[in-house]
Image (cartoon, rainbow, N blue to C red; front, side):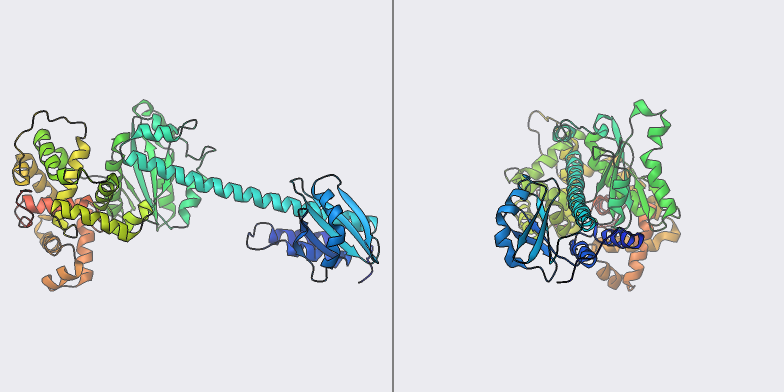
Length: 509
């Protein structure tokens, strides 16, 4: 071994050391070998970091004589237990210095082996380097804890959003006992749906996150289904109508982000009670589809009332409950999957519930068998979606005595429903947009298959897609993802007599 040189913390040496530390400090994929190698170059000693009293070598220089560790076991145990801070001994002709590293037990031990005793300055450098290694370990441990906290905060926000989507603000409060977000004390909310780069979602949410893991009075939730969506729940409390800070807070932040980033788009729902979060989310999805084709890339929901709100309450509830009776005895998971499948594709439902796509398909097959439906058919999905929407809207409605169950045809045979359909399609009635209306009708008749629609129209799939984008802007509906926009289109065409009724079991109609 080389002799141990006289050592000082010169400016160049300190710069090199700080450079080494900076390169290693925040790279979880890299160990602290560079620090040990740097100390070896300065002192000429062979070095190892021993983890605990068992003598496990965490890292070392290539020439470190591991065979001497057996003779050092009693001393290593005392240092690891915190009985002493440092020790010097000899093993054969080698001089050994041991330094306890850090304050957590069992402590790491820095072992230096050299042919001659270390000078006071060399020993000081070794001690300081051991302290830096301890600090780096603690910093990484703190970083891991912080990352775990951020992950749990994200999971809790998704859970809160899921509870609100299920119309249960009370459950959301129970989930956050001791740290209830301000949002849950509000009367109403709007949902701002931001479409941005996938990597930007966590950065944005973390930038505006408060110490409790929320976002002041709002809540930012990374969408568990769509990788580019950041769901922002912002209170619209009537008590704060004159409060500019609340009114222009997080919502204005999101608008500014869109202005500053040309690839961002923002859809904004109307105002809804907390228990109607699902309806607000659906409106935000429709508005986002419109925002994609809007110069400012920001759009608020401008659509009509949903069809289920216009149907006679007693009659609608009677039909919906009768229609859904065959699935009432099924497991709640089956019903939940069927409900989600009305708004998301099967793979997206699987991702949302953290189950396999085959499991989703199996549950939907049971639903199909019970109801006599083919849920790959858009008209069948629209019928089931309407029944589920009605029961959700009037879930506390008691119809009293059993009455004759109406057919869906009878249920929809109302002036309000007919007026809704006419108003829905009116933006497409202009002579200049007949081609768009014709494309949409054909697209529905071909079960929303753009390729089949293009073949029937003797057009191209690109043209069909362009017409769908135009229709989204004119109808204020999202038509390119599974959801209520497509179902509304089915009913608008059906009520106006522009497409035939689907071949579903006669008990449905």
